[in-house]
Length: 179
Image 1 (cartoon, one colour):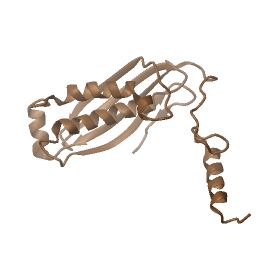
Image 2 (cartoon, helix red, strand yellow; image 1 turned 90 degrees about the vertical axis):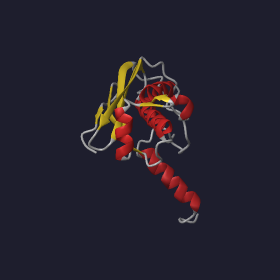
Image 3 (cartoon, helix red, strand yellow; image 1 turned 120 degrees about the vertical axis):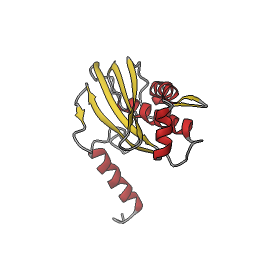
């Protein structure tokens, strides 16, 4: 067998990825949905955040109107969109489990220093798998909704810094200490 063949490279890459602990690959490197049947049911919670940054004049206009536009309240619409997105994460991300979510909360905070609205999502479940993807999806869709609701004012809007802040429950906790 040729050590430089594509098959060998693919097999080595698959072995490396599987050995690295990527949970959506089986021992052959094939994609699989994680089997959570043996996991313990615990309360699991995740917090994610993201920002929508606006040109200064547009931000000032949005804040002065308390988020009201001709289309309606941008934050109320984004709030509903974020909740709907968290509930449907398994339909958007192929290997996510459908989860009976206990709580979905979103907050929207104006940040004058960077002319942004910061979106934070909290998602909670009592189940065998975590809700990080649901929190990240809620934030992402809420940010996209803010963009959609304000794009008539400017296309110089930036969606930025979407990330997981914390997760608790299950095998390990996570707390973003930097970034």
